[in-house]
Amino acid sequence: MAIVIVLAATSCKQSAVEKKLSGCDSLQINFNDKSVATTEKTAIKKLVGFLDGKKTEQFKCGYDGKLLFYKDNAVLMDVDFKFTEPGCMHFLYTMEGQLISTKLNGEAADLLESLQKGRLWY
Image (spheres, rainbow, N blue to C red):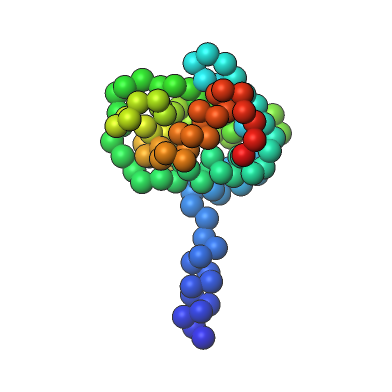
């Protein structure tokens, strides 16, 4: 019984990113050539989940854009991203005063590419 309680408690634990962005009500994605905004909770939650990827080196290959997570019209967090260059795909953000770079996976790249092309479904 104690094992079940421990497993249940740890499976509901949110990451630092999820905690910080839990009240996020909108997202603006600034690509180098255009901007896309959404209040769609599914898309926001999906992108927040991608930020918790495996930590990676801080690449020096430029960025394709920036994610701006908002709550009540105030920026909660901004995240730079690179998704168009294999071997350099990553997110870069500051969490608790520390610069963090995480791997941007293929699913995240596909979603960002779709949004960049104007397809707003998730």
